[in-house]
Length: 340
Image (tube, rainbow, N blue to C red):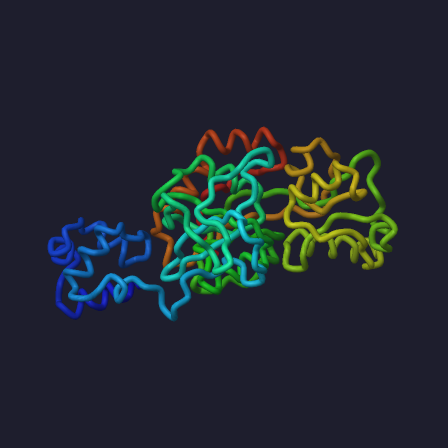
């Protein structure tokens, strides 16, 4: 889509300013549309198409006829009526099921799943910056960001492995990745990185800590993560270092908070999670490793308004104070670009 605007403008030997004048929009809007940072309004789309001598459909219809794609490639079809978050990444409109905003109320959806796929709701906007990751505080950052426009943050909760898959597939602008500082996944040349925080990964529990020998033998059920999760990999390393068996029993859960809450409810004896997630529900915590938490961004979207919004909100006094209050966060490097 964005390439079509640029290609047609260049074929006419027009500058962005000349196209803007002919279409009745600002030069900044033309630049934002061509870079994929902004979806044009109906009026702007009509003006651009008329100026470039084509139809709106020819200029802006998604390639290949695929109107929507799931952010997470392994996401199954939701139940009809499931609320969805929707945003555009490049030429693709992506969706993800929308959970409750805070566990106690309804979240504002962009679409619902119908028998024919996502159905946009009245007033929905597909602007925004899509970031996938397992950092629970991403929801806090999204709540502090603008609710509409290119600076809106669309958070998709997923493990580091699933988030990197979405980033590589062009279905997310950014992914949050965590692991020991000396053993993060290989970094593609197409990715720029910023540090968000550092925090310990370990086992949350109530009462006395279960022994790793009992956990590894499957005698004590624990809530843990999928194989692509950085915390799950830390869990397996802890078992190996303790010389424990690797016959873990217990459910695979969707995130750090889900693991802590399941432990608190007594559904399992312990949960693989972070210190902050454990503290947030009043559980004790035994650490294994300190992980660096990084934001990996497709270089094409480093100038996206949502990128700067995310870093500004994350480093703001409001959010950083709440992270420190939770405990378990080291923020001395937050917001710094990682060049090595």
